[in-house]
Structures are given as structure tokens and as C-alpha cells.
Image (cartoon, rainbow, N blue to C red; front, side, top):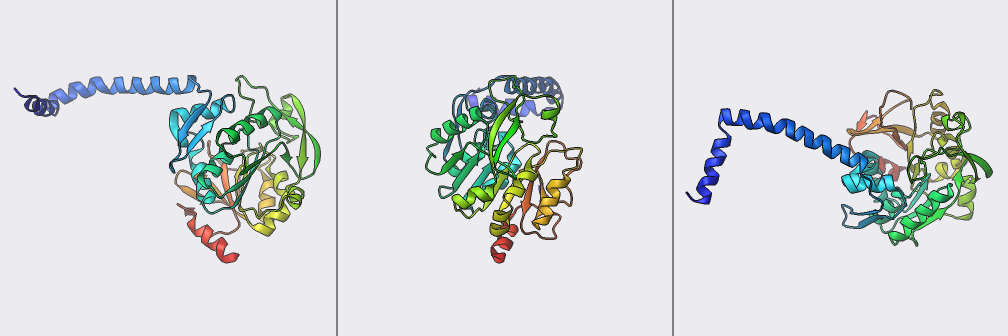
Length: 317
């Protein structure tokens, strides 16, 4: 019997009712076990430093000792391994932006991604923790983006000066990413180690570093209201899109919502099905903690893309 004839025979044989019952019954638990082993490996095996290829063809590098948790996610899952729905929103805005302000840049994932996604984008990255800031600098250098990403070892706030920053201890080599300036935070209540950081109002910073801000990303662990207050003049002037993490809190994030409403911005909850228009920031939302604050809005309950918002903002300008 020829190889082709044998192959055809086996294909017909595997479709036999009784044979398929036997093979499927054996294969399904084996497949489930393999998936379980794969998930465990991905959780437990970490990658210190990685380079991935972005959809636009650009290589993106997370340098050694500059975000091991982040590098591990990208190694195992690619670009969508880290905040996939938020990342897609930001990539859409990167394409239409000139200046991006990354508040709480951490190791610089979004700063670097923005610079690689749009070669004409200028980025200002604020990161107050010294050791994390050094990792941010290494990642900027590893991606040849020194000329387009300005890194500032500062925390944005509602006032300029010095402040106490609560920085929980980390069990891993990465510096803990949940540090905060919020004095009523769980970090403060649990007695996290304290460091002193330099703070600045963005309005004051921008007065000395003139720019038209198109996009802001804020990830500051319950301190976003102070950040927004400190950049109020620029927000009212430039009407940037703002992507912001808002964690569920007992205080209901009332102050952040008040800031957004006073700016006449509309909050949208970022989800797998699109951006959902919401009237409040605290509700049952699982691990989906990021919002798009938009200077324009429609009556649509769900936006599966944000092209309409760009058109509306452009018309307003």
C-alpha cells in the first residue's frame, strides 16, 4: 500500500464512530493536563529580559533586571500578555498623537511601546522610585528611544515639593509596583516602608517644558485625583484623552469622579467588548480596572472602537 493510500485509510478510520469515541476519550484529559502544565510553567518560569516583535514589525526589548514580571508575560504571551484591552486603546491613540505623558511609568512598557508604535510620538515618562527609574532608563536605551522619551524621576501631584511614598516590600527581584503617595491607602495602613520623593504639579512642569498634550496614561495606585488636579490647566487647554487605572476602593473614588466631571470628561470602562460608557467608577468589575476619560462622548452605550471620539475631538478643535 502506498503512503498516500495509507494516509487516506487512517483519516477515514479515525472518523469511525467507535474509534473516534475511544481516541477523543483518551485525548481530552491528556489535552487538559497539558494545558494545566503549560499554565503552571508560565506562572512559575520567569524570563529576565526579552525581545518580542510588535505587530508593526518593530522589535521591543525589556532589558535585564528592568521588569522581570513584565518580560515574563511578554515572553509567554506576546504583546497581549500585558493589559491587552488597555494596550489596544492606547495603540489607537498613539497613532494619532504627538505628545504622550506617562504618569507612573514604572519600567516604561507604555512609554517604550508608544515610541516604537509611532516614530513621531514624543513621550514624557514620570517615575518617582529611584530603582524602578533606573530600569526605565535601561529599557529606553535598549530600544534606542533616548531622543524621544524624556524620563523624569518625579511624582506628579497636586502640589510641588517633597512627599512620603509608601513602597511595599517585594518578594521578587522586581521592585514592588504598588507604591503610592496616597496617605489613606492600604500601603500606609499596613506600615509599608517609606521613602521620600520629589513631586511636581504637571501644570508647573509644562510651563517650563512647553508641549501640546494629546494623551495621558495614569497608573498611581489611588492617587489619580491629585494627579488630575495638578494638571487641570493643561487638560482644559489641550483636551487630551486620558487612560487611567482606578482601583475599587471603599471611598468609591468619589474625588476622582468629581475631578473628571468638573473637567466635563466622560468616563468609559475599558473591557474586552469595547469601551462602555459609565456614570460612576466603582462597581463590580473584576480585574478590569482601567478607564478611558474622554473630552467628548456619544450617546452610544458601548464603543467597539474609538474612531468616533477622535472625529468629535477634532471637530471641537
